[in-house]
Length: 100
Image: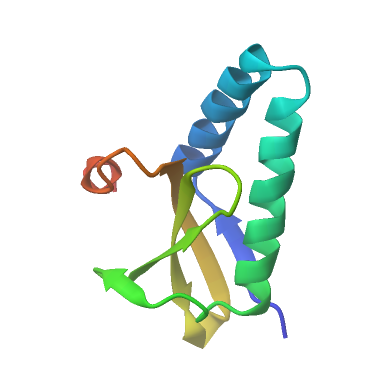
């Protein structure tokens, strides 16, 4: 059974900012970026333990085309995936932890 998906406001802001940036670079590139992210989140929902725990109960799923990591927690008792942040792999993942 697929896990319920909960996407934080912080992750939504990351997505919005990144998709706008990609769209400025090339027409429809922002749409392709969002499509890859949606597919990745769907894959996580279908198999939430696919990624190992990396830090503080957070897992990171890396996209294949765009250099982004989806930082999430899986709460097995609630069968829920909580997407905490989605951002470029060149950024320090500890930056967003201060916001929670």
